[in-house]
Structure formats: C-alpha cells, structure tokens
Amino acid sequence: MINALFEYGGLLQKAVWETLLMVGITMTVAVVLGGPLGLILFLTSRGGLIEHRWFNEILGYAVNVLRSFPFIILLVVLIPVTRFLVGTSIGPRAAAVGLSVAAIPFFARLVEQSLRDVPIGVVDAARSTGASVLQIVRFVLLPEAMPALVSSFTVTAISFIAYSAVAGAIGAGGIGDLAIRYGYYRFESEVMIWCVIVMFALVQAVQWLGSWAARAVDKR
Amino acid sequence: MNDAANPVMNAAIEMRGVSKRFDIQTGVVHALRETDLDIAPGEIVGLLGFSGAGKSTLLRLMNVLETPSSGTVRIGGRDLTGLNDAELRAARRKIGMIFQQFNLLSHDTALENVAFALRIAGVGKTERDKRAREALDIVGLSDKAGSYPAQLSGGQRQRVAIARALVNEPGVLLCDEATSALDPHTSLSILRFLKDLNKKRGTTIVVVTHDIKVASYICSRCAIMQDGQIIEWIDMADPKPESSLGRFFMETAKGWSDDTVLPEENA
Picture 1: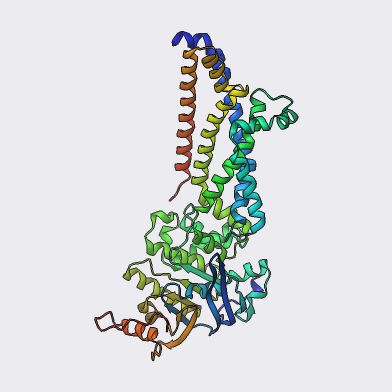
Picture 2: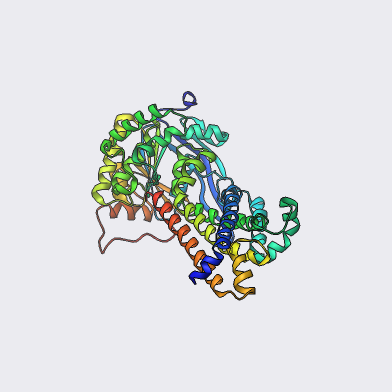
C-alpha cells in the first residue's frame, strides 16, 4: 500500500488538483448562475413576491429537463459545446463545462427550497414596513436562508466531487480518471484504494467545513 | 421620504365594497365578501371570529398586504388601492403591523430588527440606531438591544415587534392575533401597553382575535365575523349581541359553562 503511494504519489497529487479545479469551477458557476436562477424560481412561483405563472413554468421545465439527463449522457451531449468553449473535450477544464451545466439546475433547486423554508410571516412583516422586493431579498430572504444556503452549497459541492469522478470515464482527469485508468483498466487495486481514500478525505473535509460554516451563520 | 404626503396620527380607516377572492384549484374561495367598514381616528376596534372567518384577510387588506379583488381602502383619507408600488410602500410605513408569530429577523439583534423599518426607508445608521433605541426604550427593552430573538421570551419578542411597528410613528397599528401565542399575563401586559399607546398617541388600533377576553378588554367595539363577512357590530361598553355567534362570544366572556350555547355553524 505504502509503496504504491510512493510510486503513484505524483499522479495522485496531480489528480487531486485536477479534481479541485473541476469542482472549484463548477461551484463558482453554480453560485453565480444557479443561485440567481433559484431566487428567480422562488420569486416568480405561485404566491411569490413577483409571481409570474408561465415564466416560472418555462424556467422550471428547463431546470427539470437538465436535471433529468443522466450525467454521463449530458457530458457526451455537451461535447460540441465544450469544444467550442474550451477547445478540447478532455481534461479537467473540459469536464468543468459539463459539470457546471449539471450543477446550475441542481444548486438552483436547492436555493429555491432554502428560500421556501424562510417563514412567510417574516416576509409579511417586511412588506408591512414598506420594504421593496429587492430589499426583502437582500435584508430578509438571503440572510434568513443563509444557514440553509450554506448547507445547499455543501451538498452541491459533495455531489459534484462525486460527479467529477464519474466524468473521469470520459477522460476528465482528476481522481476518478486516475482510479479508472490505473485501478480499473490496469488492475492496480492499490491505486484504486488510494483514490477512494483521497475522495473520502475530500468529502469529509468539505462536509466538515460546510457544517461549521452553516452553524457560524445560524442565529436561531 | 414621502412622509409629508402621508397621514401621521389619528388616521381613520374607510373601506368601501372591499372583497377578496382567492382562485384555487378546486374553485374560488371568498375570503372576504363585499364589506364596508369605518373606523374613526383613535378608535380601538376588534375583528372577532373563528378561524377562517376572514378577519385576518380583512386586516391584511387594510395595508394592502392582500390586494383587494374589489373596492377601495382609505387610510387617513388616502386611497391605498390606487397607489403605485413606491407610493404604497411609503404609505405602509405609517401603518404598523404586528403578528401572532412576531416575525422577527432571526439573524438580526433586537436593535437591528427595530432599525430595519428605518433602514428600508433610507434612514442613515446613526439616526436609525438612535430612533430604534428610543423605540426599544418605549417598549421597556432598552437592556435587550443586543440580544437575538432566540435569546428573548415570547413577550419580549412581541415587544421588539411592536417597537419595529412603532418606530415610523404610524397613525394606525394592525394587530394580527398579536397575543394568541403568549401566556395570559404576558398577553395582558402587551394589551395594556397598546391601550396606553392609544391613549397617549391616539394611534388607531385594529385587533384581530378569536379571544373575547382580548376584545372586551381593549376594544370599544367589535365586528363579529363569519364566513367572510361582518355579521354584526357590538358596542363593547354596552354589548347587545343579536347573532348566535355574537351571543356565544359575549356569554363566554364570563367563562365557559355546561350551559354555554354553541353558535350555529352558519348563522
């Protein structure tokens, strides 16, 4: 086991960085695009602050279509888009495109649910003092939902660490790729085991950080 | 801001032909049937009824938290139903509201919760902290300014909510089951505070409740509500209820007994 670590340590280290790169890009896109998408889904939903029935339905439909793609199929379908954006369809940057496309609707739904869990009375109280929709979003909805939003971020990050390993099947690089090429195709079980150990450590670390952050922002 | 355009104290409430319909999947719910209502400046009026009678809907129509399906709502002579969004928000600053569940921001301290009402009106930090402190002082919570809602008792939370509702010096205070979640002695102390506020500032107060004790203590008159309408008005100084629901409420003011006649389901 230890010998394998010495032999493949460099590869493993490179794989960890590639995984972190993929997940880092993915989470950035998820927050920047998926976050506002979730907010808009919430605000335009039935009884929402800017209720808009057909717009909400179209948006919800689009999100569901993306979410219903089996992930590996989505990666393959997106290959032309990936080539256009990154210039190649392999490597961590290329995989980040597919991962990001999958993460946007994933995170958006979690954000929508987090906002839905803010007691409606708090919004009523803000409206009764004369707050505008933007003020309610900024001073009420986002701060009140913050512990849930942090948890949603954590869940998304962990899910996409796992997805990034799946992307290894089409040459994404990262820990999953290493596990498949060495552990599976070349029967180097020890590499496989190390890959699993590293993935486990990564997930634990993210979960621990996420739980800590969620507690830190929770005043309830 | 637009304060000059808004009524300050002693605002009257006039509603004409106001109704509220909700379209739901199984059909239409008439939460409030066409209702006229006049509340004089400085009055304390109760809206009394069982759950689903439409009393909260009627209250929420007064500051247009619910948009009326028909009719007009005037506060201090100003028609709120004809206002654009910005005008309506400015008008709401002069209509305070408190709730059964207090509805405080859990991530903000008591002081920040009160200052919130000023913050959204664009009042600067120094000024809003000063005024929020004064408001907390009025409700007797100066020493709790830095506490989060989770660290306060129910009664203290409701006092913070009252301070938030009063910090813009509203002419009207709307109370939606404001004491229903509190124990009797806390309820009484909150109601005493409201009564005193009405006496000192002349604030018009509307109280939604299903508790006749609340209504008979604080209100000069009460609308008995059933099935989305006001079925009668009762003068609390000289109550002469005519509906079975009105009689039920007045009778149970003394307490329940084996002889208490339950009201008919649909009077």
